[in-house]
Image 1 (spheres, rainbow, N blue to C red):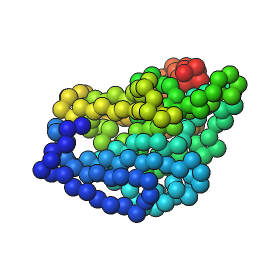
Image 2 (image 1 turned 90 degrees about the horizontal axis):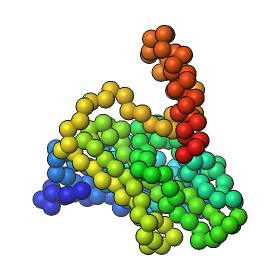
Image 3 (image 1 turned 180 degrees about the vertical axis):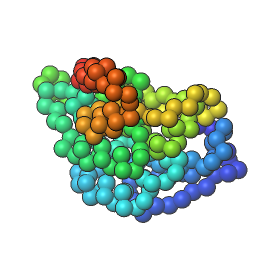
Image 4 (image 1 turned 90 degrees about the vertical axis):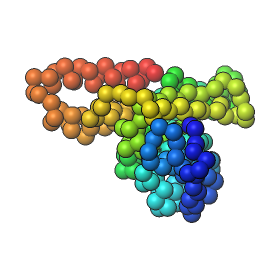
Length: 214
């Protein structure tokens, strides 16, 4: 992002392990809040509760990125001893309630590895970019990817956005974490023509199969 140095502002929130910068970016007429978070590997739930109660997740035009130390399902863990995050459901509900969209990597891959091989190998996608749904709808285009150059035991994750790019307006923004939720499919089927239900069910099964494969 290219920041306007004459319109830069800082806002402090009562949370730990985070830095918030608020300012203007070229091609966008409103301030964007950029929050970098380094989440603890222990006592994660109290930390998340503190972040949630601070109100920071409800900011308009929020871009939250960093080592969030969370995974959202089986597709984001690799290795013989890797375990699915027991707080995955909590995080998904939190993102839905705060209207935050998890920006998927261009190619799904781990962002952290434990440096071991064989059955002792553990790898996870712990680093994420979360963007407020209102801001996602107004982005021209964006791309998220991770580097293959180690700085620590984490691989750097980058987010590129372009505000000035013009695209067609989409009234509905799809988020892949909704797929396993039956309420999501009920909402979709209520809004489509009944003649399309058979095809929709086929597409649902196909999408779920693709999610398991990837």
